[in-house]
Image (cartoon, rainbow, N blue to C red; front, side, top):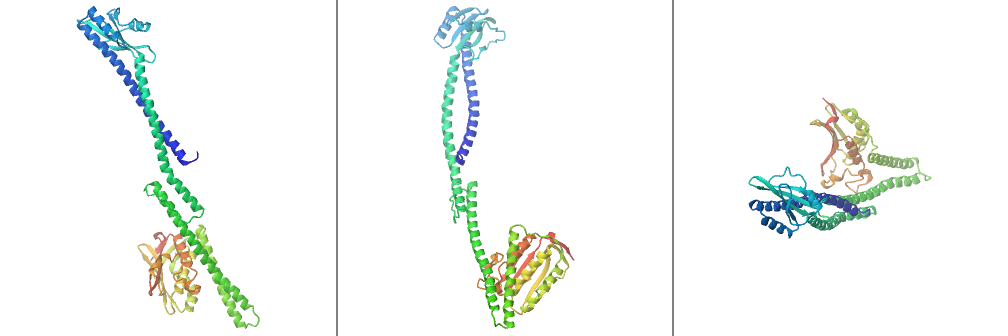
Length: 462
């Protein structure tokens, strides 16, 4: 009883039955009243017809002829003089007929009138037609019809409505069953498909071709299934990459710790091995910090606190921090920030962005080359670009460089290729600032990464 098809069927059935009941009641009432009026009008017309004959020839023979005609019909006739004394009748008078004969006829005109049309509560329905001879009232033609005649017509109409009602009810139930089955069958398939996703099923196929809401829902479920498969694969790749990234420095630390603890090593050798251990520890610390930052971003715990910042001052601090690394790799950094640009950003996070971009450029730029860091303002928006003279990125790899743990050259060592988290962090921080990151690269010509801030973040530009 908790099935959707049953609930939907009951709901539709109730609505349709209510609508049909209202329509049937309205139609039945109108038809019943129409048939009732038809019987009364026929009775009055018959009385008027007799009246017309009598007005042409008002004698005993004609009176008897009229009575004889009605004696063979279901209706009966009573003809009276102007004082309502009975002249002729087709059947013996019943008390109710006598009662109707005594009713006042002050408002009766020549077209006649219905004396009693209450067929539900009376034994007879009656009409009266006045007889006028040479402009003077000569008498009345009373027509009486047993109410069973009207009841028979109404009963016949009721039986027809009952038959039509049962047919309509049957067709309604059949239509609801087909309709609910048609609607719920794809929903049941979708339910099973989602249960399959919960149980870990990799692929879901819903062959629903209609371009309606159910078709859109089926398409969304298939899309969700494909996206979940992609996320599962990404998670596997991510965990595999993280395991590799963590295992490598830990292996180095463990191995060189064992070597450094051997007896007989010179002080120079020990310092060399301890330097390697320190370097791997710093790399491991940075990796964990990056992962922690990404985790906070995913959980919306990574806050941005904006304040007015001079880009030239910020870039000067960043230049000072990377100066030793530049010297070590025999590289030069050219900073172009001619205008005094003040922007509304989180200084600490934005410094982290520039450091990550420069670190990425340093790793991919050959010795004796230049790296450019510049600021531009166009259409009220600030752009910060970091451009290197490295080997460039293949065009087919560009859409993926901001994915976590993604490396363009999978064969490169960690020393040159990094962990693959730097650009992911850059993208997350810039998007937290409601900005954009764009990349341009050409093989053998280097790479340029540009951060574009929204117009509202440019405070002054002189």
